Image 1: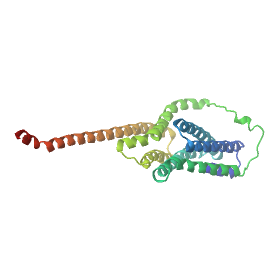
Image 2: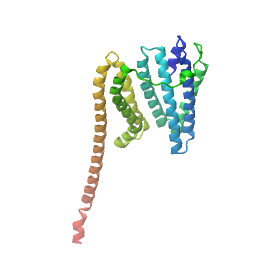
Image 3: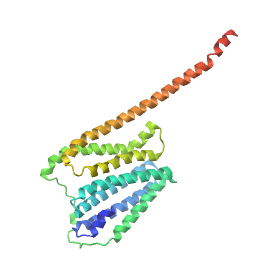
Length: 274
């Protein structure tokens, strides 16, 4: 988050970056409110409301910072936007899992840490020196306008299903994988689920960096089958683990019955003879 504004302050850029500062500052304020809601939540409805506020703040900040990075460095902006998202998810997942597993008060400390970091970032943005002059029409430029260039529409239609599938897999990992690992393997430490999720996001960073020199169409041709293969391996591994655990329980049950029968078997003839 800070890198985009550091680059922005070192070179002249269009005035809309100033609007990005205000947008990110507002998103950080919303995120602080969300953290307060998390800390004070006393019901499921309150947790859902806090998550909704946090999600809105994250979406606003991500869009504004992505635009700022592209304005500062159009050549490397797309790569930086991709890397910072997954790197942040990796660090955040491992950090949160570590705090929940080893730190005191796991239900509150994570949100207190995030609230503190959001406050520090908001102060940095507020006191950051501005290098451009505002121009008339800044508020008018905030009016939403969405359009897709004609030459990009066919590509967008072709890539949309892949985008949905990849983020659906990410949503599956973020929401269900820690609980699924706990049920399938019996590992109850939250750090285990955090490591599983971090493996997904960190491998994304490695893939982006290692495939920079390969044309995008070739990356897609290899990435789409790899996505399907990853889903198949995940589901197959979970299914196999469930079968092994079920077989172990079944064998243990049979062993217990057999042991009980053998334990009492010698006493039956003696009982009949008496």
